[in-house]
Length: 395
Image (cartoon, rainbow, N blue to C red; front, side):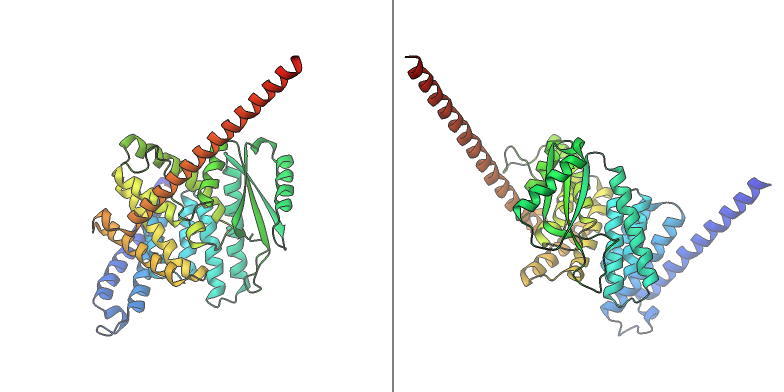
């Protein structure tokens, strides 16, 4: 009897979901003809985008109720691309990320949801408080699950000085002795925490983020990315040659398992920053390029849709220059063309950025090689001088 009852409840749930799908599909047909808006010949692009975003949100809800968050992911991203100012779209994206156990990304989506709620005139403090609690829970979950690094947030109110950074690192070393192979302090953008943030009284309490690593290479990756104008990660031994399949797999694993998780965690408490340095979009587009070369179409689609959602949201989070706005539009167009299978890779803005990134990477390699050679020469000279002194003393 209990088994039959469970079966009946499952049947009712799926019947409800199927009805929702039918309604969404019918609504989509009406929207494509303009009838859903009551203005079949006068509907504006904003109105159509709003209705299409509504459809995407219903698909997200349906897939989540079916416990298939991987299928809901693209719809969550597309709902934001179509209507980035609506806070519930970001909150649904956070829910999908949580179900997929991608807690750092869920935290960032919740942070943006709370900011959008305030930006668009939301006044119900209870709603904002609940979103902040969700954001805080996701950050704590991300910190708990992190194995390769540990984190420390330091509040400050004045300008960051070099002696202050050294003091912070000393405290971190004492607090987290197991994560001192490489200590990285993020100076590219200031961080905020849900416990202290109040969007209406800008600027909120700011924090300095310090990360400590068990593996020195992870910290060096971050240092490299933060010091470059174009945050492309190449590590080419021969920067101007095409990647082999083995190199592509190696780069993809480095990006997917080591670099992107660190960047996602950093951005979970960083609302805005330099568009080039802190958006995280460039790295995702590079990761999508690697997935494309390996013909992993489904994953590439998810990454590109996520990058497009990030690009659509950036103008709401920070002031951008005309040049950055043009770059943003070009990247959006490239991402859309990639999803639709249009245009040759050689024509893309992203392809040009990668070429510049390779040149930059090559220059950094030359600089590193020069500094290492210089260090060796200095060491040899000092050793030679020491030998001469010892010879003279003995004679």
